[in-house]
Length: 250
Ligand code: PEP
Image (cartoon, rainbow, N blue to C red; front, side, top):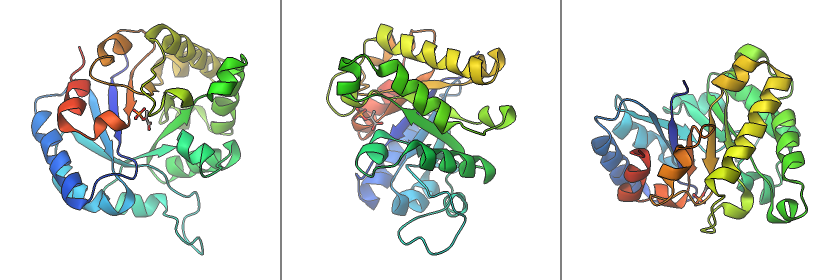
């Protein structure tokens, strides 16, 4: 039985006061929620302030990106150790905005996933196709390539530390959601890729989140699907009321 994970990606939003207030509302609103994991990922400079609020609560803390090197002349980058030192335990990697705006490729993302695991952060590897890839029938090839390349040279014991998020790019921030059936079928494809790469056990134990315009109105039907183990939420994670409703899916 996979434990659900509801993760909020705050992207480049909120100032310090807004981040602290939202984190406080989430901590208070989830004090009795013990049967699922809850994660928030603020932007880098806000992590210490948010950590002070969520420490000891039911809310996990993560980052939205990191660099794979441990230290050195990499202006503007942050390492896994730096993130851990300010309270982050998770990191989102390969988000479509990193892939498409910042031109991160599978090789770089794979280095980041390996570095996160080596340094004790729990990675969420994001995969998903563009609209034109979906329309030209390439969804399965794109998702397969991103999973296989993203997990290249990662051992069985390490891959069990990875969460995968399927986020069709055309559904992110657009209000368009994949139907629960479409999402479930891609999640099932990802499980079969994991089975081929590793084993039935890895395929069954790995959590696969759905992301792309998840809202209070669609979370219950998404979570009812067998292969959907949680959600990676952008816009709707920025308001306590909507994110708490998503966290409390039925
Ligand atoms: C995301 O950024 O990961 C995301 C899914 O955004 P939204 O929920 O706003 O579509």
